[in-house]
Image 1 (tube, rainbow, N blue to C red):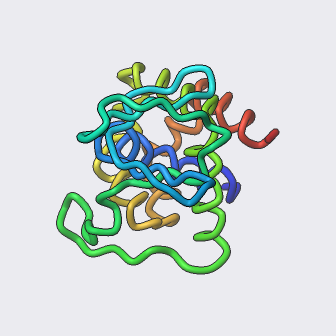
Image 2 (cartoon, helix red, strand yellow):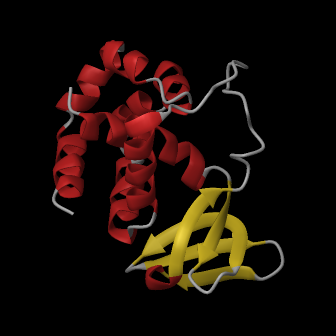
Length: 166
């Protein structure tokens, strides 16, 4: 199984949880950051709902990074099992894929569209895949029978081809 495929699947399994279900921190290229709920992506502009400023629109060209505000605080998976991030080359590939996806408004819009597909979301949010993704456990992803269904999904295949070409 290709490492790029694994890194993208791991990223995709986490992005619905990280991006649209929790509070985000958008770090801007000027060094500032804004914390709030990412509520939309349209035409290269992120829309963030903040407690203090209401709805804020941020051009993608000004974004340095997007991260989950709770990610660092949560050191366990949903099942209560501690996870240790993968190390080495695969960890770097996963982090690079996540950063590329999270900082690409077009990719995020595609993910938002994929989230409307119940069959695909059922696969991506399957607890065994999500837990393996949080632990960056490539063996568990490779050995999970639902990974084959993800690999065969035309939307996932198109997304991976698109990301490979960037």
